[in-house]
Length: 266
Image 1 (cartoon, rainbow, N blue to C red):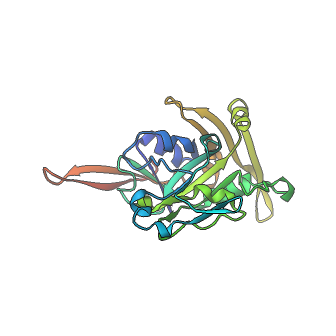
Image 2: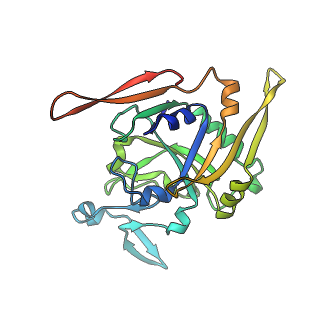
Image 3: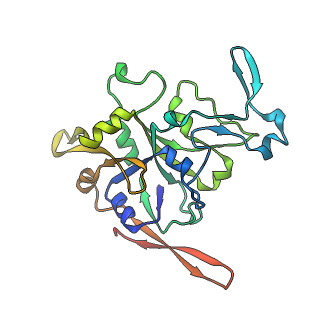
């Protein structure tokens, strides 16, 4: 089970019926946020001074034109990173994963397996040979100077699934889209629809497995891509995903406790 933390019941409700908003990765680099969403090093591999200053010998070795050197940080430029749009979750129901969260939504990983099936080209010659994926999902790998991230190899798409172990308590799982500016602009005016027929015991059902993809910009100026699978969710499930409210109560003059309140289908 996966858990999406939000600070709005309305947003939780949209997610619970199958509408997923993926925000541009640069949002989480540039936003001012002390709740746990912001990370200046998103999309990069960077070791803080309190690590490399004490253990410089543990830095990874990089090379350029045959010259080897110790690497403190590898970071693509913002133009490149802006092609990634992400939807972030957690594998644990922990109230401290995002400190300002008021609600969380229980999600099954199956929905992202479905998105991957619908959004991956069927023909090998249409797939991205650079190692990127239009859609991907998986757990975040946490690294530090004693445990370097796994080399990407031919899986370039995994570059945004690495974060420093400072964020390890979040146990993050994410889904991501990698798109061009032209694609973003195109689906803003003409949504993309990806659909496949569904069969049960050899008989075609009267609705398709379908996702509608559209882009936009929110009131704060951040770009997003929205995947709408609400029609499929309504046809195949018993109801909306479970929404859980996070409430705060003062246990003393100096501390507060956060607890979970389950609200079925709300």
